[in-house]
Amino acid sequence: MPRTDPEARRQYKREYYARHRDEIIAATTVWRKQNPDKVAKYNRSWRARNPQSFRDSVKRWREKNAEKVRIWRNENNRRRDAKRRAVLCDGYVRRVLSKRTQVKQGEWPQELVELKRAVLKLRRWLHDNDKSEEHAGVAGHGAGHDGGGEG
Image 1 (cartoon, rainbow, N blue to C red):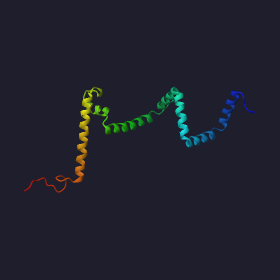
Image 2: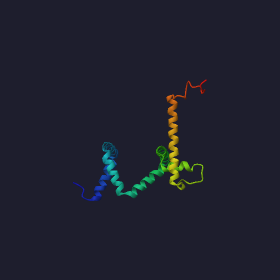
Image 3: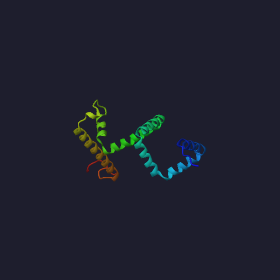
Image 4: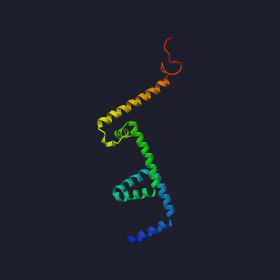
């Protein structure tokens, strides 16, 4: 006979889970691995419905895993900085300008930032071309050139 009382039904489910906990966890793990799209969709919808609970759980996890967070941030900062350095974004150029000065990054005029970016691009171009000439053995450079004139 089915349980019609909601509290009796909840109690039955709790007892069933307690008796079959390991099997339920194993089956759930398998299902989650086989249905990553459904799991992701459910997680997104749960986070949208419960933003405060989600923020609280993230905060608790970060507090419990401070070392993992520190390592992740360091790696992520290195990747982000490498990307910013490669494209010479404003923040990176302002940081270069501010090194060894008392001027804060936000105080540099945009025109100066653009000029510094041009200087950095020129330096990169010269550096890259100088390396390619060394490897190509351009006339006047490299082996076989004694540095003297005609004589």
